[in-house]
Amino acid sequence: MPSTKPIPASIPTHPADVPAELEPDFAEIAEVAYLLWLDRGGEHGQDSEDWTRAIEIVRNRNGK
Image (tube, rainbow, N blue to C red):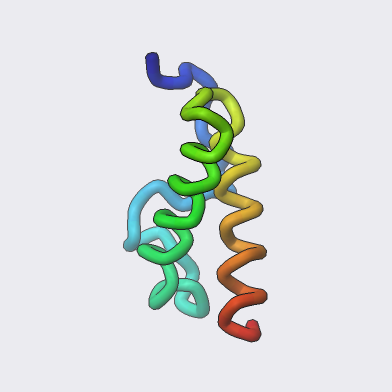
């Protein structure tokens, strides 16, 4: 069942909403967030935490 929590405004929901400095990495961030979600067993309710952690992982990986 999908989470019914609203998505915080700080989390882009569409590639067009991503800040320019992150645009090339949107797909990578989404993939990492998805893998974090899978790693937690696919439990809903921590989507914003997964997304934020994914951004940190991608930035560290890409040296940003």
